Amino acid sequence: MKGGGDATMRQKGHSGVRVWCVGTGSPRLDGNRMGSSVAFETEQGVMLVDCGVGTVSRLTQLGLRVGDVHTILLTHHHIDHNADVPSV
Image (cartoon, rainbow, N blue to C red; front, top):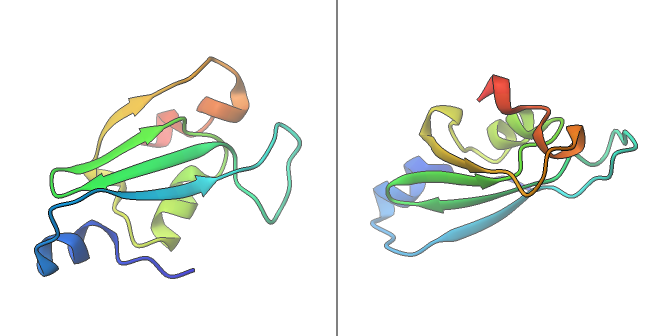
């Protein structure tokens, strides 16, 4: 999946919200699925709900800039939901 990311939303003048399933994995590592994370992309930037293992890599693959993340909401404090927080 190729993503347009925040830059594309601004360039095209979108005023809505894009929701990206960044990671849908489980605590057990899987090379095909990243740890839990959902990104809400708006013209103002990106809000993450959870930030599990591989979130930063997946954001980049989707064309979202880590520097545009302005909020991280953690549903709970397990490593599969917060491992990449220090990288953001």
